[in-house]
Amino acid sequence: MSRDCSIKVWDVDATKNPVKGSSHFLVELSDHEAPIRTLDIWSDGHQLVSGDGDGIVSLWDVRNAGVA
Image (spheres, rainbow, N blue to C red):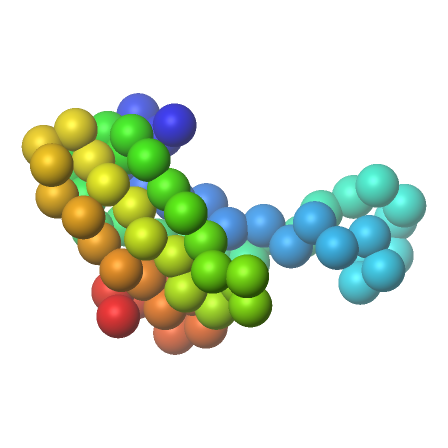
């Protein structure tokens, strides 16, 4: 997981990327003060939840690049 306390979101859908096998950087989410230890993303790709080493859990809205 991330040691810099941030989450980098990439679009890895090959049908949307011009170069086969490439990915596209979307957004960096940062609100944690400890390294991120766990992460789960909703099937629609719009929200995710992360947990850090201090026990803080954050719910993120990827479309708005912030804490939900």
